[in-house]
Length: 218
Image (cartoon, rainbow, N blue to C red; front, side, top):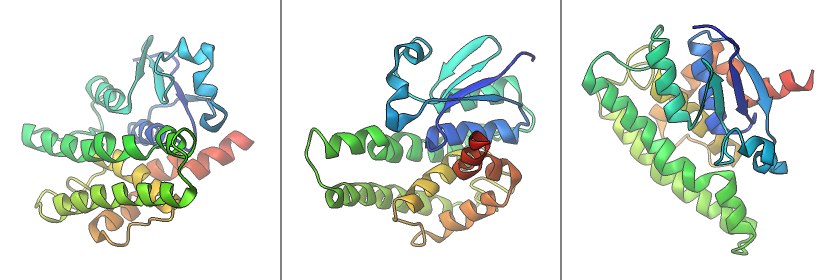
């Protein structure tokens, strides 16, 4: 595979964070184009021509464009299989997809920026109410995620075995969100242990929002 790879994202976007981790794990060089979510850059007509949803990330790769982090990670693993993000066996692949879906489908969509903005503005909720909303869904989601990890012999140093992969790409950004919002993850020791193990790896550290912010500031 050849050609320039461009990631349209925002340094604080957890979905963009997932894709950065995956690109780093696979040693894929890429350029970044920033769309500032708090300034509504993602709703500009030029970006809507790239991604009609007006969401990040969008990955330009192999002459194609893909939105949605789940689809992007699957594409990367199918076209650049080494090192793998997904296990070789069907049961293992189903398990890590299940773990990723807990975050990508059940926690993140109702706790992301546009939902919190809607709670504050059209619905008139104050910051305390927004925080209660956020913490409730974090607790619901991570309690289930912790139980899934703690009860499975497939959990190792990372979410599945002893090599970082697909599910870890989703877990780490959501843990980061929880910490930023003051929720923390100390109540879920397996979640915390795995997130900390991932944070020690260069692929995750290079993808971290603080690292990206420093890179963009240069």
